[in-house]
Image 1 (spheres, helix red, strand yellow):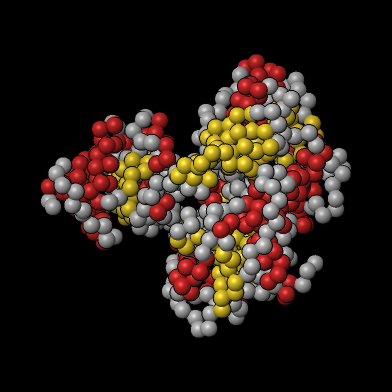
Image 2 (tube, rainbow over the protein chains, first blue to last red):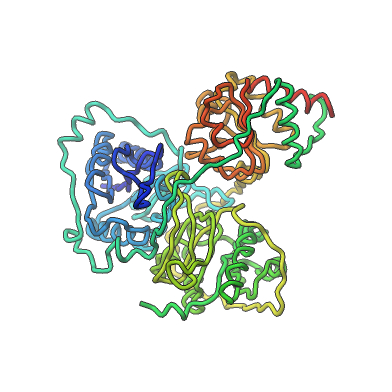
Length: 268
Length: 337
């Protein structure tokens, strides 16, 4: 039986983020949260594989208590089980510390065949965790696939790699990173939503994972955020007045100022 | 904790693109690396792993390096995650660079993340700026990167571990041609264990080049939105792009309407642009789109609605019918040649 895991993250929806002028921290209260958009493609791939080949599929997230809502959403999509990795000491983990925690999680799970991730998170936008987890677990990471078939103990994938399109065979376990728009993520079903609230979410904290003492997101992350600022998109905002042809002429002038030349392309 | 003073010099992973040329992004990063090395009074070192690596060295030497550490071997023709990671990690352990910069490419991102994990150090992705600052420690690398879809900028340091690593996207810095005196070339022997690879390639791979003109490296981008109303109107945008050597892009809407292919989307779930000039035709300016255009040097927005949010991020605001303006521009380019 194939054992599939999908890594997801709860992120703020990116509209209207504000910064507390006194503390310089993001104001998180009242901010709507969503499943990281890229993770939906990972969930869909996992669900599709399960439908085709059977097995069990689990969503895993590391995040604050409220991230449970995102796991419920996954369960409503048809995910079988959910693991919530949550502990105060994991807060402020950078990608390196996150990877260390996830390694503990999968060392504890032991029986994993396929771990699927999205391409990056919309909040920190690093995309590093899949590569680092591949190092930590010493399993191959396959990115940019466009087809996948599960065989006995291995997968066959078509992938883009550099400037090549390759057919590859990889022994399980593997990590897969799914690119955007790889598939059409499904919606929640009413029945699914009902079931989602009946299921139990497995909680894993520092003690349950028996974490070594170098795991400490707040104090031992190699990178530290020292400043946060909302970017000002300050522009000239010069309004061009006049007739339509005045406006067209002004655009043509700007085009010319930018060194853009008409090119000869023959008849229309 | 390691003695941080043992770590010296600024390294740039000088990627060879598709085994034919030095990646332009790597040359740009060398330009910035030179500045950092000058301020630290340390060396700028280019790291090159390639087949026939010597052929690339003269060009790299024109870009401000003090030293090139290189390996040349058939097994380095294509990026191979295990070979490259092992070799680069060994070199880092041997030479102990203080700063290690990578192009933000498929290869650069993968390699940087793996090396950072092995070195138990920090990595900042897609930085917009780099400076050396004494604000938080002695000559610490202070990186500036966008987060939350570009709405927010964060400044990040890596105070207690080395190397301080980051990846940098194409177009962030400018290439600079400077030739230093007494450039050292250090050739390292290729030695990598031949343990079996977990990924087996079946059959012969087919060549599949990415399109050469992409949104992210176009100097002139013409963006279309729902305000162009019809597919015929949107097609005029393609015509104008053809006549000006520009590149069409747009919001999510024209994709859903079937006017434009998926890969031309600009914004959160699409590409970011770094053009000299961007003209937004009939685009309202939802944040999902706007975050992808803010790195454009000049922005002209055309929209009927004077309150459209796109005007807040535009240098030139034209309140009017985008179709009429587009038609007028086309007339100029078609008739008067």
